[in-house]
Length: 236
Image (tube, rainbow, N blue to C red; front, side, top):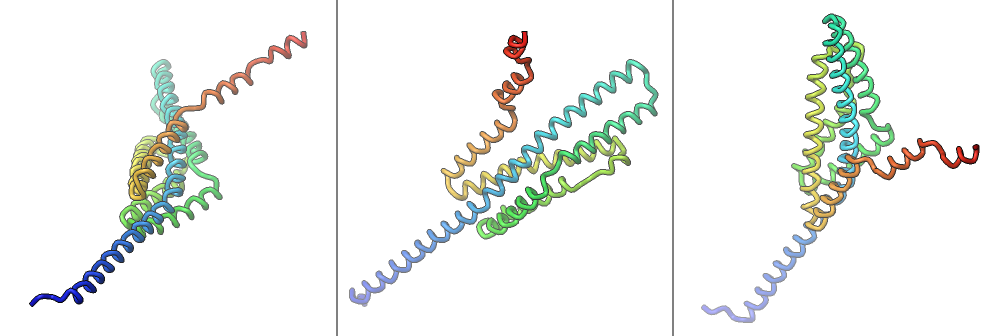
């Protein structure tokens, strides 16, 4: 039995209307998901750059610790220092390092409060678009808080165990920084290719800036430390 066109045309119209409504709904949903991801990005970037700055500070202090240990080793070999005295001096060195670490591995209280409140909001926003990424972000934040809060009793440190424990903590921290960077790029790609490229360029630019001291600032500092030739000439 042939279907009358007068019945077919309304059915086609209904079908097209349904397809358009589904398409429009998909566009609106995608727009909302992009907005959730966009809201999460700024606190994630703030966390990443805070961690990156702290890592640069830790690299400096770790290098100083390594240099101090190397100098002590040379002194021990040259003067044949007894083992008990070596352990005592080494323990004092590690104790001083831990005190320095505790003083530098932190953020101002207001900054921490603002950062972690913003990260809570970011995690909630991201969970509406990508629950797995939101979980990973919350885990990275929790581990960063642990690193900031953990304090070793500086006057009761077993130097060998301390160095082993601190090495593990530092490696975990640096792995987390790398994971956070990947997560930021993943979230930015979910927003769009243009946003991804902008975020990638921002990360690269800021990382280079944090890794290399500005030569012009250093040059200005050196100039201020030099004697004022004009002043000396006038005095003469």
